[in-house]
Amino acid sequence: MDLRDPDDFARAYAEHAPAAAGAAAAVLAPVGRRSDVEDVVHDVFVRLWRDPRLFDPTRGPLGAYVRMVARSRALDILRSGQAAGRAAERLAAAPPPLPSDVVVSEAERNEARAALMRAMSALPVPQREAIALACWGDLTANQIADRSGLPLGTVKGRLRLGLARMRAELEGSELAAATVMTMISSLL
Image (tube, rainbow, N blue to C red; front, side, top):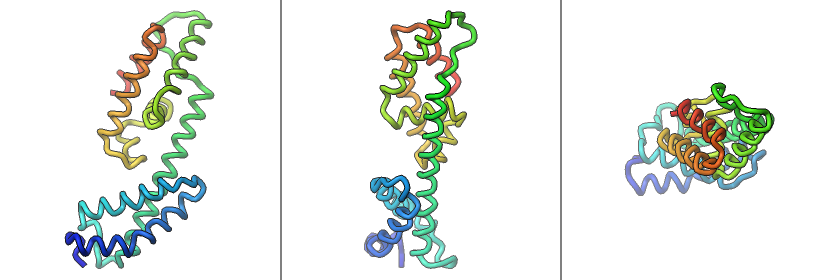
């Protein structure tokens, strides 16, 4: 079977996609999102289409390879979700630190933290998760990309867009805006 041939690839997909979905579903069952399973199957076959040399027939049959890659990718998604959940818990428990060079009262500090939390909660989930993982999970953009299986440019874009939206949301609060600027300079 030549995976570079569209007809052979279509047959391989028809034959092995259900097994890949089963392997992914077995791992992602606690999460229970069918869309994640579909994303895993799509990702496995897109990678195989782009670089058929990833599959080495001397190491085993295609079905075993597809199931193994699907399981690995599903584990990545599960771990990424767990990391995002832990980051969100830390975010809720410990609001972001304020810049140390700004002297403010406790009331101003609490107001700035509340403004930051409102700005974070207004972000789309992918941007909020990327910022939480970067700021409170102490992960670099490369680490976030590796964990989530996303391209590095996508992760950096989510970080930039999220921080820009937060800055726009916080225009009325100088202290909160200064905190976002500190976050931006540390991330980019």
